Amino acid sequence: MSNHVIDDRATRLGEYIVEHKATVRCAAKQFGVSKSTVHKDVSQRLRYIDSGLYRDVKHVLAVNKAQRHIRGGLATKRKYESRK
Image (cartoon, rainbow, N blue to C red):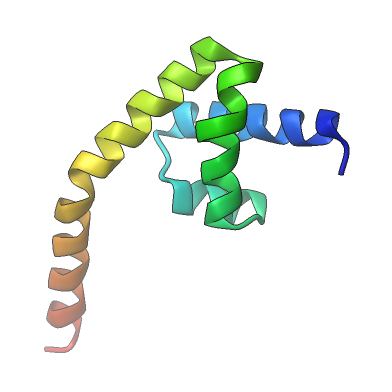
């Protein structure tokens, strides 16, 4: 894959994450790539492509990371409620 294609993907992933307040997992599913690819694109490549977008993505991912224990707890709650 050429650098231009990868840079474009990183930018589109970043924009998607910021616009939708999406998680890495959600963005990976939407774009049909692995979570590792999304993470590398937005945490390493995007820094050199668009520093403003990089900061915005970093903020969204920090919020998601802070809330993940809550989402996990809610998922577990739904799982056991559905078994009743």
